[in-house]
Image (tube, rainbow, N blue to C red; front, side):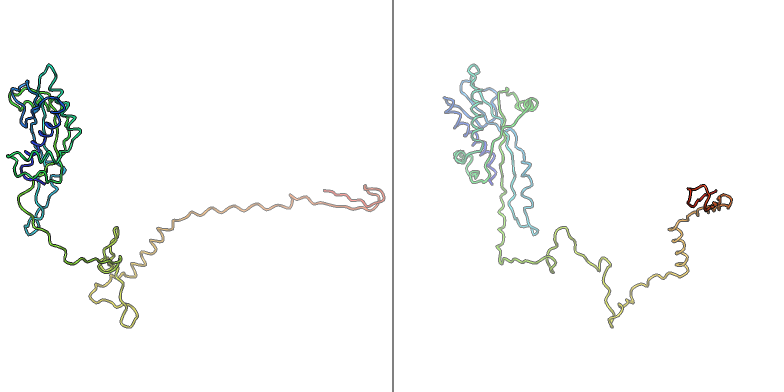
Length: 309
């Protein structure tokens, strides 16, 4: 976490990071200015301008510090504003030698190799008298620079806001994440006086209910087991309970045949089959058998048998 000087401290540290890495590589002195692009740039000396054109709240950490106070109003956690800083970096120089493009290439390579703001650069930027009292170097969250893509429409709107400033070749970077702490000090939490750990099986009194199950309350569900009577016989009848609704025998008898008739459908009887005609005596021919002994049509010397129908 850091105080309210964090925004200016990040801008100055970014300018020093570019100046320390681009100047020796370029071969000559490069002037890095943490201000908006000039309306009348001096092309004799290579110049890089670092301009903070927008500050937006960080969407992922916007409500991360809520709630900050307890029920009695005491401050539990110091509120902090999470911010993203948007920079436009422009390069100027002799156009015939493409100084601006060479400078911009060095800036892109520097921020690609060192995307996180180093602590020694932050401490070097804190030596400025107007940044005295900044505690950005002690922050646990380091600032990271990420390139941002802007289309022609967004670029024209951005440079249109810079009144009487000619367009120059530029790149846009986003610095995240910058925290700004509140000024109040939170009340420290009370220490633990006595640690206590209890182990209870499921189903024991006071034990938690297993996930996906619900406790069964027979009395609430209306399925309570009746208590036996004083002599151990039939259960006692509660006099305060409302009497059960009696059904007259006539109604019960009237309902029984109707239900039976509804369940058993009537079946049609099959017609009686006609009896088969008896056989007459004239249809059967009587067989007459005559046997003759000797002199018949059979074999000579044997008995003969003839059948006449």
